[in-house]
Image 1 (cartoon, one colour):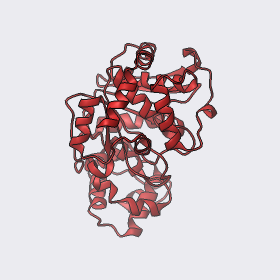
Image 2 (cartoon, rainbow, N blue to C red):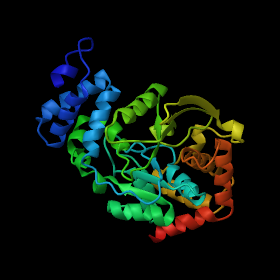
Image 3 (spheres, rainbow, N blue to C red):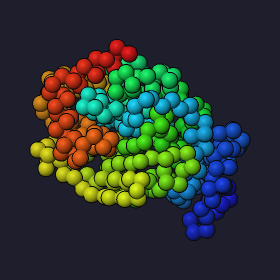
Image 4 (cartoon, rainbow, N blue to C red):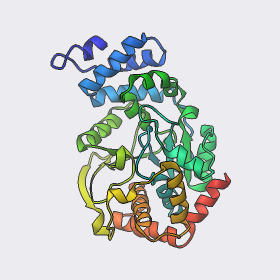
Length: 338
């Protein structure tokens, strides 16, 4: 397969689904020589994977994932696992607020994943004193008990975790960084993610469509800060796909929702610790500034993605109500008590 994808910038070919699946099986089995594996990963990075290839990689991974579906059908949030290094992680606060508004949410991440090895969902939850190193069944119970649940990659996706050392030595991101976010450990019918360019969002949708494992009802993606599932202030592109085949892409301006702040206003000195502190302050009603607005908007997207609001504006009203009436604080208290 390295000969197929790595023969050169003009002569490299795309793999078939069967070829890509066989390659991924060999990788999980530890079969390739480290040099061969590195060459294969780098060749795929240069070539750019097709949706067919990504679907095959994803299916082979999902075949090894330990799934635990809650009774609820949450919105699946699989942000980039290698984390953020400058701006606050808003997804924990947004998920708590969405849960308080009646939209169950699942987040999942690893622990210092290559290549960035920065702060992700787990590290913010750890700072909040929330249990993170759970078995998948306990994560599912957390969703049903609280409305927000966290799935820990080493528990539900050990096959990918076993590749940590090889990925770390690569020095650059590989297609594993993409497919690990698509694991969907709770078996949710809605995926919420982020992208740098609209073409990538379309490719993720096509990956889900080509997957023999996934059968989603909706995929909502937007241009996130640092590639994460946190909405950028100002202009943001959104992609919205439904299982009936409709695909819409549109723009939102945060200023249209009365939010007057810039990306720099969401930067923090210590991502995990500051994100945890801000999460607590926002849900406790201690802030009415741009942090309140940013959390409410991100929660609104989760509520809207879960089809619990007819529009983003309606989702924003529901999110603000959940903060203002103390419901979000109660959810965070319950989460910490799990």
